Length: 378
Image 1 (cartoon, helix red, strand yellow):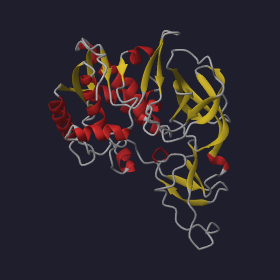
Image 2 (cartoon, helix red, strand yellow):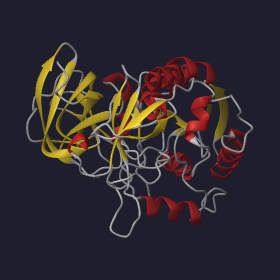
Image 3 (cartoon, helix red, strand yellow):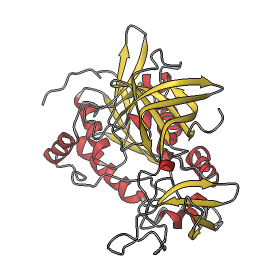
Image 4 (cartoon, helix red, strand yellow):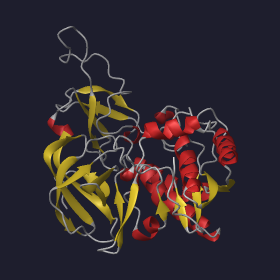
C-alpha cells in the first residue's frame, strides 16, 4: 500500500491511547512522511489501579506499538485539567438531574485544547487522533469543515461537534476515510501487539463498574417516591441523579397490581420524567408513552463549527444521541443563546444534558446541550 507523501517536513503529535485506532493512525501518518511523535494522555488518577480503570496496561500497549512502528512517545498528565474542566461539570450536571456527555466536553477541553497547547509547545504543526471523522478545508469560505467519517457505523463527529475553527485547522483524522475492518486488517498485517484489543467503551473513570456505585462516591443519595403517570406509587428511587430518561434497567419495580401482562408477568418500566422540585421520579409502562415522545427540543450553549449560525437551517438532519440514525430536522428559533430544533417525526426520550448535533449532508454544523422540550418557556 502506497501513501501520498503529504507530510514531508511537518511534525504531527498523535494522541496514542494504546488502542488499535490511534496506533494505526500513527502508522498511517508515518507512511505519509510526517515526523510523528506519540503522546499518551493520562486524564484520571483516582482509583487508577482498580480493576475498572487502569491506564498502566494502555501505556504499555502504546509504548509497545510506538516501538514497533518506529516513533517516539511520551506521557503527559492532564488529570488536573480533566478534573477541573470535565469532571466538575459532569458532577454538576448529574446533581442538577441531567445526563451529561463527558466525551463531548473532554474533546473540546482536553484532547483538542490542553493536548493541542502541549503539542504546540513541542513544535507540532498538527495534532492527530484515531477518531473516525474528516476535516476538509473549504477554499470558497476559507473555513474548515468537520465531516462525517466514511464508515458511518463508527463516525464520531457527534463527539467532536464543539470543536472550533482554530482547533480543527490544526487537526488530522487519518482514519476518516477508513472502515474499522480495514484498521483491524492493517493492525494484524503489521503484527501490532494490540491488534486484537477490544475497543474501549464508556469513559475511563467509570469503566465497567456499576454506574450508581460510582456516582454514590461523589453525590449524596436522596431517596424519593417513584410514581406512575396516574400517581400510583410503584417504589422508591435512590436519587434523581442516578436515573436518565428512557432508562429501563435497575429500577427495582416488582409486580404492580393492574399492570400485569396476559401471561402474568410484569411490564417493562421506563423512566419518563423527573420532578426536581418535589423529588419525584415518574415511570411509565409503555415504550411509546406520550411523555417519552417529543417533536421539538430546546438546546442551550449552541456551538457552531464555522463560528456562526448556519446559513442553512432547514432540511437538516440531527442526532439527539450518539447511537442513532440521522433524523430530519429544522432549526426553528434562536434567541439568547438558545435554539429550538424541530423534527419531522417525534423523537424518543430526548434527554436533558445530552447533545443535539446537526448536519447538512455529511457536514457537521455543530449543536447544543439539550435543555428540554418546548413546553419549557424559552
